[in-house]
Image (cartoon, rainbow, N blue to C red; front, side, top):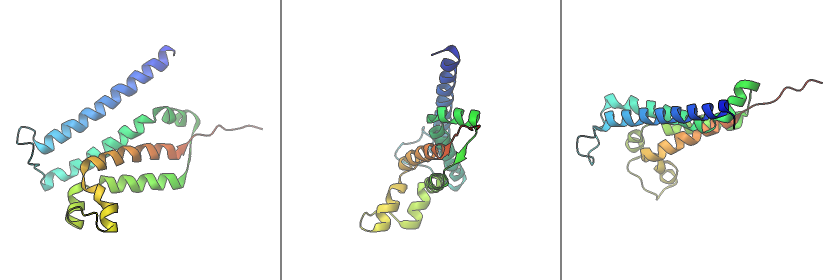
Length: 150
């Protein structure tokens, strides 16, 4: 590994740590860790912060595929539209705050098909995991192709 590759890897790790610290800072602002941890203080003024957290997790997922992003930057890209649409739909579904899912569908009950499908979205940690996965899927839907000259 040469010095340039090593510096790029260090830069990506530092960027990922920075994104995770931004997420922690926003969560800290939402939940006010100085209060009791069992009571989550979520009011309407904090709901936009969940979307910001979601976008940061999508960026974190994209950073996992940083080598692919560099290849796309160097060689250009094409889009696998089916994979891209799946990634966007997953990003939209997981970006909706869990509070809205609970208001819309009630508490989680695995007794119905809707409950089984939508139930995992009631938990913000599941949404965060899905955000990371959607970031990975979106980057993987962009593939680079070498131009051939004949």
